[in-house]
Image (tube, rainbow, N blue to C red; front, side):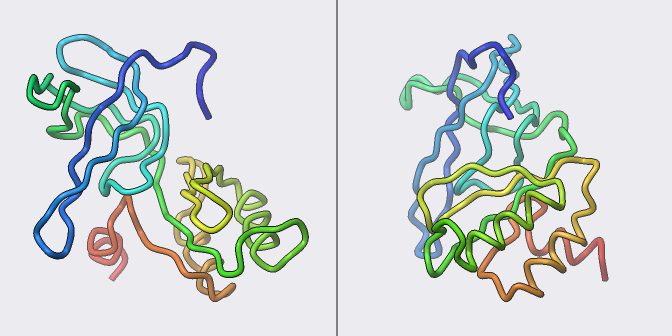
Length: 155
């Protein structure tokens, strides 16, 4: 999904955990100037952003990184995350599910053979991907739009 040029920056995202603590994820991005960055990978943990989004991320001296503040321009990509059990291995059910997502037009990045972030291009119907994951009885979550955002639009 990356362009030919290499991204030049990382944008820090804080993810608030259920116990109130936070964790950090950094995403590769292109520095567009004036604290604006275009994301060049998909979020494995952050919510509400997808590959290609342009975000406002002022530099945080304490963190040493540009730090996410808000989304300026949505790319049109959407993000879901799939947790495979068993792990994806050539020819197994998990592999067939992943291949089906690609056949629907989605793209993906692997954290490992069990945890995969799926990017859904603007040309692909998100409802079809959701229906496919439900049909396959996959373990997955909405990341962008979030579960609440998706169901508010589709209820």
